Length: 137
Image 1 (cartoon, rainbow, N blue to C red):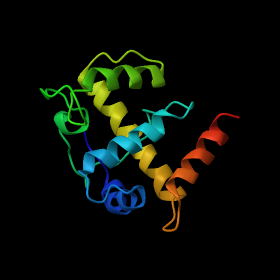
Image 2: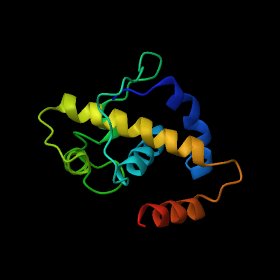
Image 3: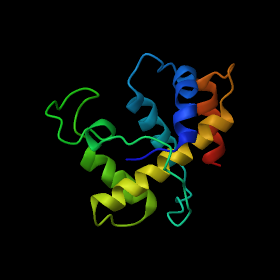
């Protein structure tokens, strides 16, 4: 899965604001994907996003694909995340390539939301409760 330079530049700040600064990067990336997936508005897979200056993360890092541990945060959530992504986009994912593209777009949207919404003095729990209240009206 690819990220953009925008995501990579914002990742340390977002991780710090979320309290993930001592955690692996994938935790913050998964959080950003989850924020995007929580929205009712589907992502626009036709939008052009420049991934050339970002980084590439393997499936085992982002979804845990192939991990043998079935407990904890290193477990294989690949199929579960695939079902959630397909449901959120109201589409059938026919290949890992389609799945990967959807995750990339959800990651970018999630980081965009987090970077524009969270401030250095933000209380992430207050922010989350406000986001859920606004999205459920």
